[in-house]
Image 1 (cartoon, rainbow, N blue to C red):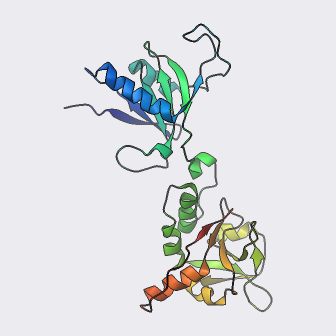
Image 2 (image 1 turned 30 degrees about the horizontal axis):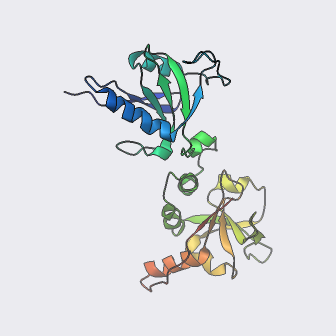
Image 3 (image 1 turned 135 degrees about the vertical axis):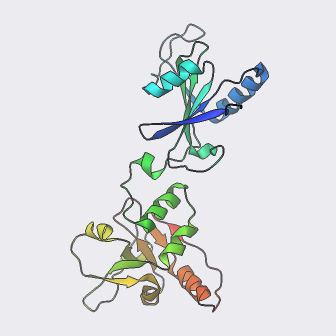
Length: 256
C-alpha cells in the first residue's frame, strides 16, 4: 500500500501538511515542486551565513517543534502550513496555505516562505468566537472561507433584535462608509455589546417592510465583523420563496 504524498498533522491549532520524500522521484520532479512554490511564496532567509557565505539580515521565525521533527524526517523538502479553518477535501487551495518551511539536505529548517495569496481565517485573525450560526457564516464569508449566499439564506428565517425609538420604529444610523442602515443583532451577546437600549425581537421577514427606503440591514455592528445586507434583495428572495417571483437584486455588500 502506497503512503500518501502528504500527511496532515495538528499542532497548537494549526494544521501542517508535510510533504513526504518520494522514493525514486527524479531531480526534475523536485525542481518543479520547488519552482512552483518559490514562484508563489516570499522567502525569509535564516540569519547567518548562507550558501554564498554572506550573512542574512532577517531572523527565521520561531520554528515549532513538530516542524523541526518533520524536517528531520523530510530533508530537502517544503513543509506546508494550512489554515485550520479550511476543512475541504483534497489539496488545499493556495489562499488557505499560510506558508512553507524549507529544509536542507540534512533535515534542518533553513527558510520560511510566506504566502502572499494567503487569506487569514477568523481564527487566524484572532476574532471572537461566533455568537451564533449567522455570525459564524458572516465571519467565514468576510474572510473568504464561506459563501456570502449563506448569509442571506439564514437571515431570511432568522430572528434578530432591532433597536427602536419610543414609537417602536426601527432606529436608523450610518455605516462607516456613510450607507444609511438599520442596525440589527443576531444574538443576545451581540446586543449586549451596545449596552442597555430599547429594542424588540422580530423575524427578519417581518422587519423588512419596516426598513425605510434607501436603508440596508446592518448586522452586528459591534461584533468581530459587521455586515451590510441589501434589504431589497432580501425582500426579493422572500417573495421568490412565497412563489411571487422577484427581480434580480444587486446582492449584499460586506461591512467594514
